[in-house]
Image 1 (cartoon, rainbow, N blue to C red):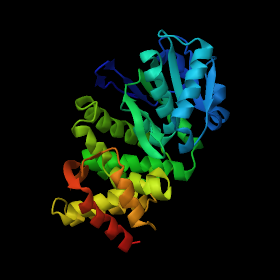
Image 2 (cartoon, one colour):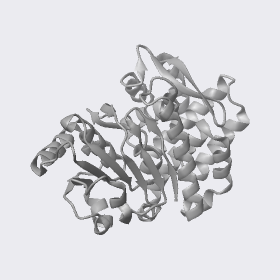
Image 3 (cartoon, one colour):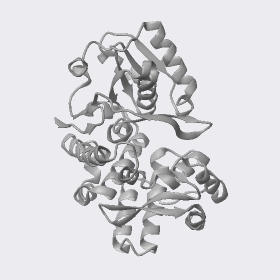
Image 4 (tube, rainbow, N blue to C red):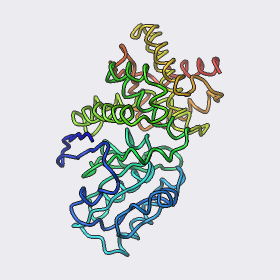
Length: 345
């Protein structure tokens, strides 16, 4: 079992890797007022929940809306949740995002914790204090920066995930390594098969060091005014592709990372050897380097990206594996990158 304690503006947030959902009570400051989850997670793991009220939300991005948040508020009101209450989200990234947003805004802020049940949520969505929902299909346009009291990563929960869901998480793991830890990147290169079969020692180390990268960046820039933007590596184009064509998150972000790596190399910032290593690692985890896309629709989606300021986007490029750099790039310049993706499809 490993632990990380990043400091936020409101105090520390304890992240534990390798403990069990069965020990959830030890992480709560009192019996939780409610658990927020979805039907699939409740069916698989509900027998391990502590005895308390359960609020179910829907599954999929269509449930990550203000309408769902309103339903959670209604449940809080019905249950008599007050400012002394603590709520716990048990689920993937959508459950954590919705629960964190609802808790951080109800009564101007409740205490809350996360038990992320997917690899993606354990290494990314459940950590960092970003809580948000989509608006008219655009990702995370409404949200808050509020850290959970705790994040409990139970590795046994990952055994129920399909391969496609694991790939979503490994895409984010590769992102973390690529922007912040060349040693973790090399570790991934040498132990692909062990990672894919969730070897206990390997996956614990991967999750722990991925979280250390993100926790360190978040501690230095909690509200994404500078360095935290590095965590968007691959996401500017990836989110636009995801919005337009609806591939899985990992597949879309893989395409975005490949494009950003190629742009970094074209600008003379990244060696061709490192660019090829990044693309080889993505491919080794079954992630795509190309797919059928409609360039005009993807470019249009970039105009609505929340990271856009005026006619520029804070774009993350690489100066080497483990060394990311934020560069303002015009939306028009990115059109060439998208056109290049279309030519390689």
